[in-house]
Image 1 (cartoon, one colour):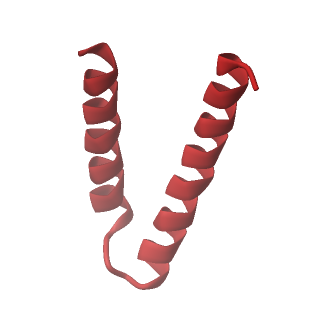
Image 2 (cartoon, one colour; image 1 turned 45 degrees about the horizontal axis):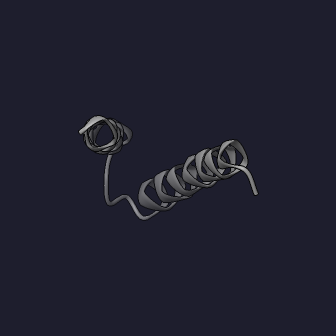
Length: 53
């Protein structure tokens, strides 16, 4: 498997995982959609920061 293929697969997995978590959290009313969006945005920013560093 090429690096590009692994990156694409990881992106798809993360997108599906985040959507699954979002649906679960809103179904269980653990987080409001705004709270969850803020958490996902912070996690994404942290991940991008680690990728650069």
